Image (tube, rainbow, N blue to C red):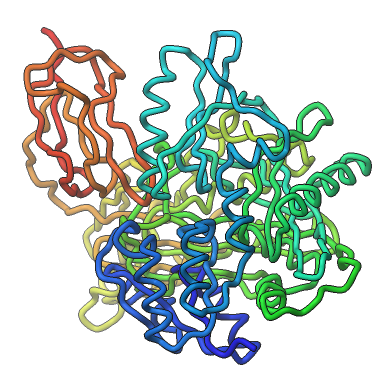
Length: 614
């Protein structure tokens, strides 16, 4: 029996596993980097062990340090979570060699399936060799890992070399393995997967399907179970292929077999020899705790012969600190407030006041709704997200709500090109037009000498705010009859709550202020000074860092005075385990290069200047 479990992971992954451990009476051990010293997962574990350093390569990817931490903390078992070392056969062996129980499949099974190229060989599928024009489009893909890292779509042959180089670098950084391969890219396919669970007694459960087609940068955004609208015959084929993949490597524990479904056919992608981020939707419809089953299987317990039947429908949305309207740029800063209605499941590694840093994935939380039907689950999840209090950096929350209510999604017309087609409409700004007025009234009340309004006429007051990238100026005035403001009746104005009457309908606007950042319900604003500072203008062609990160590469031969073409990659920034290209805005000459490889930059830092010919 397991008494003390170390989780070789961080954030919501570690917390999710800790929750099951608490229910089973198992002590927990967390590991943390220096950047995660005060992270929620390190605070809630029974014991925490430091891994010196900040980056994944220095900490969570150091299997030797993790094993030492387990031994030092007196753990008798290790759960890898998902991501980092979860599909590393050498790490699994090191855990076993240390006399600890490994919560996962045998190392040989991990090894067989951890490389996507070897997995395809086991399933009788060969990757592309020499790519020709006839093969396009193709997908460059990392052989190890997942999460969309180390993947590039190539539609022109002359882009293949750059895609291979970029994918190798990103894969090596994220997984410690730079092997990549090339396969045909299927346009508008559905990403469907089968959850499996296998014990040491020969039983393999196919635990239903999931649809994970809504993706950005090949990373899943919204997942659901069961996958809607699949013919019964195709579901049986998917189950048979998934069980075949598991049995081919004598699999044990929880795993996922992934497919692209197009034209009624299933195309094998890979087998993930671990738990998946989206496992909660399977838990919701099956009624079982997959982590608890992993632990029982590791202890040698047998599964019943028949898997549980699915009940209802579940949908999960991944809440990210990112700006979808700006190429999904990851965001950092303080998460001031996160409160989700209790009608849904919340898995998160953050709490109020936590810092979102640059070293790790940008996902804040997973929000999961379960209901008797798909339509009810959709309505429940969209409503919960819409009513979530979320104060801090820009997130994808509005995108999620609009996606869940989009006619294609509600009609279950799903494919992986959804965001390519609809991103512009899904990210169109829709701020609350009355948010600046509410912010101004709350600010004035909060600054009042006596905590209220003076009962004498006053001069018109003006406040300026930046909202959705545009400046807004509001005016209000206190009279003996009360407040008047831009033709809107002010029913109540407090420091935290403003009530306005608009066209006879009363609206409550809750106001929260954090320095110059203001949140009015779901609208974020930045208070601007009354008299703008005169600032020196940036030179035309200035390239600013769109996010905090590290300069990991400068284009070969690039130096001040180099001629560059519009769109030419100049620099690569790495943030939150993803690499981002900085390209030349115009054709011209690189007049300034302000950064070096290895340098950390803050958002808005000047990276370079490209001067166009006059």
